Length: 54
Image (cartoon, rainbow, N blue to C red; front, side):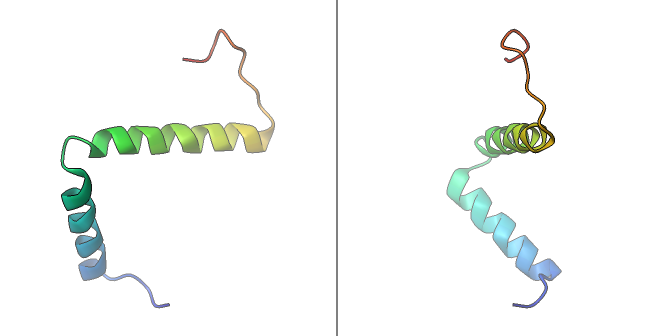
């Protein structure tokens, strides 16, 4: 599989925008960021205390 060019990235972003709509994308990115943070913490072996979780 080749590298993604500018046109391919624009096409992917346009499809995502059409599928989820403009209002839903920030919520999806927030969830993705939270998931990545939890994955990093778990891979380092860090565990948050129950009172620190939100």
